[in-house]
Length: 397
Ligand SMILES: Cc1cc2nc3c(=O)[nH]c(=O)nc-3n(C[C@H](O)[C@H](O)[C@H](O)COP(=O)(O)OP(=O)(O)OC[C@H]3O[C@@H](n4cnc5c(N)ncnc54)[C@H](O)[C@@H]3O)c2cc1C
Image 1 (cartoon, protein in one colour):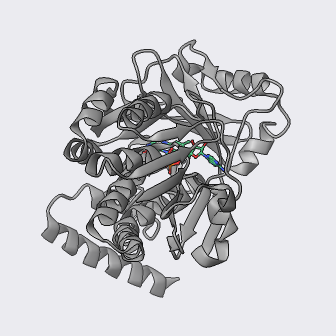
Image 2: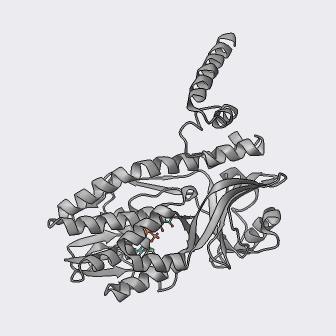
Image 3: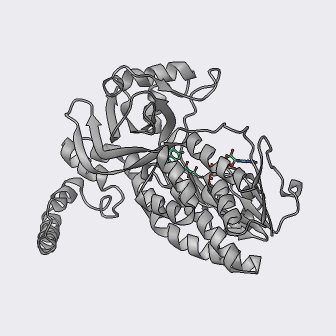
């Protein structure tokens, strides 16, 4: 079998590794637009389930990734003007570049041909292949060419965000919030090596224009963010990979959904098939799980169309919950004015519960009261009494 894959991100590279491990005779060629060793973004988090999946499918790669990973412990809310609050949890993180370097070296060692600086804009420019894999990310060119067949749906989030690096090491997953004259701005930060952390700054579009980020150059924007987050950064700098002559690459989150994940012999994997908001930190893991499923189904079925259909069914089902959680989490951050005036401990409770469908439905104070109750019978009793209170209040007004 011959496979052509567009994109040397986590999805394309891990797929190539698995295909070669399972059948060394399969020819697989990757075309990547960037030069080797160049990518966007900083560190990404991942959790135990990804470690297990990596170990099960390729222990060699799993060990290398874990060797270069950073382990962060717990979550912190650091709201300017209040003492930091600590929550449970933990996970790993790794520089996106380190991750891609590990995957690239492993794929090349297994015989995958990788052509860097080779942008594919038209499927007719690809060599003959039984399967063409569109692993070219959220703005997939290959997907756009057949958008009607994939029934692609794109929408944009309301907030602005920018993905930055910093030399300040966040040993805990930290949510930092700071008030400004134009509204609240916050960040999601975590270490990904002993030298560097990721810091994603986020705010509403009104705050973004109010602070002048639509007009400021890269260095002025970084200086402005360093000043706003001075208390959190403790003198450390913020770093962007963007060219100095361009502004800071603030984006709105791009939601990608496809009703169909394959058309003829083209199949979507990773972000070209689906995106999940960065605030749930699982896009890389989901891209890798797509690769595992596609490799498994291509091996299990002799008929390519049957393999692609089985892959599509399996992964669309698996994506239902993560996509729901990602939307709830993104909406929570888009509704900060609803929560920001609460007592910080209540605010933190809601931040940690942001993936719950109940959070947007209940008044925040009531959700916090319910959250404190551990006994289920008590919860039901409390819910009944709250429902009755709400009913009588409505009757009165
Ligand atoms: C701010 C932010 C933070 C994130 N944090 C996390 C996190 O903590 N944890 C996590 O799991 N996920 C995180 N993600 C999501 C994660 O980065 C993506 O889900 C993941 O990279 C998807 O992998 P992929 O291989 O599908 O696509 P990508 O990583 O986007 O790779 C696509 C590749 O295709 C190449 N390409 C594109 N077009 C062409 C073309 N026409 N020809 C040739 N090559 C092409 C690109 O150069 C790129 O190398 C984050 C995303 C963002 C935006």
